[in-house]
Image 1: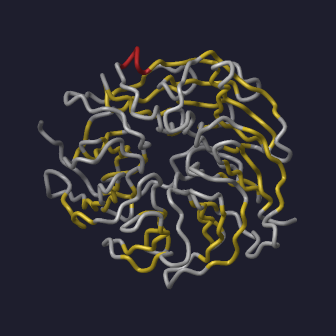
Image 2 (image 1 turned 180 degrees about the vertical axis):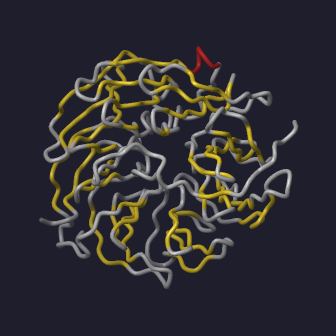
Length: 411
């Protein structure tokens, strides 16, 4: 296949709809970087940990929350009635406001739910475990429109069900479908297709989520398949470039834009990591950092002070600080092991979850070494893997059986 000419890569920081300053409107937060701009949060905790504001039961899964205008939105499932659900509740007390439910038989396969809805001022957008894209009215939970990606695009449901989180971009919703298309842009109001990326190689959907970027001043989207990363024009869905590099099973971490022209890609099950350098004078991206044995299995690393931070491995489960050329600066080895737990950067600190135990640790965000500020047993293992959400000093977490909200501001 002929590969179009790539361009230099720049991060696009303002691709999202306007939102409340404290909102966490989608997967990995307002800028999809697992970073919050909130300040004034507690740097030490009492012996019992931060105050628990509320706690609710949830069905087995890893589905994290979105938070908009004081409301929490999340996916759930009723195993007694076999109904898939989207729930809205108050951030302050956890009380339910509305729920949408429909009959859907989903057998546990490494749990059931695993994605975060995207929320704007009008609607909640949800890609369910069996790859149906829904739009719900924000106030009432009434379904506005739906797209069955399996029926309409011949999408293949990934192993362990869908793990992709929708990307909001202005009045568009961007989804990687696989099957008849690689990526598709939908009108958020009507659900109508705006464009699709041709898929002659029959690339399939993975658990990775689409990430925004600009390339040579042209807005576009990055995605990673089992055959490697690629880039698509935001204007018309044209495939701009792709890099052939196989990853194992179903990739979960998304491509990470690390500076003006480099893209970090990693995957599960000892897939290792690569750094691609995009340049205008080459027909396709080239390796900048070649195969590196360190990898992140579930979560996308966080960029901070010219370094990458993530739970990953040469030894599994270590929270690690890496240079942009893949060299380890420090890790939590000998101090804490986090399995596949999630993490967030806020107010010069990292919240990092122990995936096997539900222990939450508060770390100083520094490139000089592992420095723990506090820890608390807030959830119960195993498989505490869900992404975190933070709004107005309230941290929403979950394990396999419950969702909780912690007061991490302490006022």
